[in-house]
Length: 136
Image (cartoon, rainbow, N blue to C red; front, side):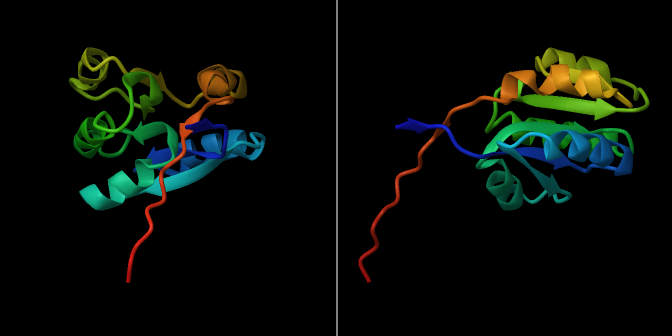
């Protein structure tokens, strides 16, 4: 069953510039909330991506960790729902992102650029998870 409901914008390893830009955009979007992840733990990542509409990975300070996070995100989300953000180009980062089909966002980005990026995610459908009864 598909229902329309609240979804998360998940930020991985977000430094202040990215956090500030996305938080300002999300504040104006009634159907999206912000979730921050700073751990490579697979369980934490999986839980964070459970209600994700889009994941943005900040590669500015730690490109190696960002590339690993990108691989984990692509196990749960489509390439269209995943982006890598950076304010400085790192060796191999663009090729790494493009080969996987994800957007590479060069920051800082303006409000109109964020509007264009988030436009496809403003209206979305999320599968309703089945609640299983436990017998105790």
